[in-house]
Image (cartoon, rainbow, N blue to C red; front, side, top):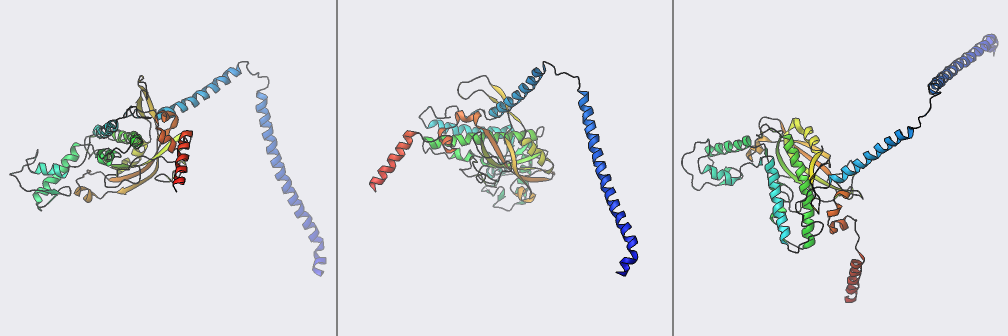
Amino acid sequence: MGFIKKYLSLIIPTAVTLVAVVFLTVSLLMAQSLQEQLEESISTARRVSTYKGQKISSSQWKLERKYQEAHGRDANEISTAAKESSQRELLSYKIFPEPKETSAQIFKEFGQRYRQILEELLGSIGALDSPTDVELKSLLQRPAKGIERQGERPGFVIRDRGWTDRDDEGDLAIIEIIRKQRAETIPVYGNPTYLSGYKLWDEFIYAGRQDAVEKCWYSQLGLWIQKDIIDTIKQMNVGSSSVFTSPVKRILGVSFIGPVTDQPPAIDNMPRYVSSPTEGLTTPWTDRIGNEDIDVVHFSVSVVINSKDVLGFMQQLCCEKEHFFSGYFDKEQSHRMKHNQITVLKSEVRPIDRVKESDKGYYYGDDAVVQLDLVCEYVFNRAGYDAIKPQSIKRLLGQLKEDKKDEDKATGRRRTSRRRR
């Protein structure tokens, strides 16, 4: 208490001074904020004043209408482009939406034509596989172009893509030369048996009209998709005549049921519609699944490619492509249209074991090469191709429900079954 009494005369003025400082500081900050608000208001007022005396043109509505019409045209063009993207030429005009002929021969013809088109597509990019055992045996039993060979070797058998029943270093050296000559004279390795549907139609057995129509439908979807893949390789390899100089060295395969493997795909390797996030080959980051406007299909594709061209391949795969369309039913004048239906959902780059590849007969040159595995989605616009979609497919997708007669038949069958029990 003595201390407080002694310095009381100093404590009170000090406290008053501190309060004054705090009050002054708060006042200055508030004043600064108020000044900034006033300056902003003055600036706004000045901008508003510049419009003073200006009158809105009596034709302003016409200008606004032009803007709105332009927006409307943009919307219509987008809708039309989406529709046209799925209006594609058909492999056969005899089958969809329902066959007009009763003979099963039209399905066999479809399968023959399907295999032929896949072979032609690979031919359009100059694709061949490495020499088969049969080819190597034939070449080794007679002088090959540019290869000196004396005499015949009776009983010579080639196994496992070039290894022989006789460990003859000379034969193995010639086999290597033949294989390298193949790589030097083709732009890309490819084999139609590794594409979807080729094996199916090679072993097709007619098992009823609906089954055959559905196989044709899914094959048609697969053909459109695989054509875009092969067209992508064609664009990437423009100007190259050798695997050694091509960006894309080899197409390993296309799959709709899982990842591409080193074996020819199974017969059931056909497109499947994705109607929920769990039905596809991967969880789509696009969140796209089939709905009232679109159908979605997932596919896997694997290629051996120059490591520098990985990004370029993905960009080319997803870019806009052209197609021609002349109507589904009545032939019209052919129209040039565009489509852009592919999105990459997942990508993986893996190293190539060159020793293992050369053992199988594949040579890629000096480029740094990798295996690129992609999982992609392909989007079909329903308005563009629903006119030819088979009834059973629409029913599967929930676009059609069983009609009253079908329901009555099903009910009758159930009642009969109950009575028999």
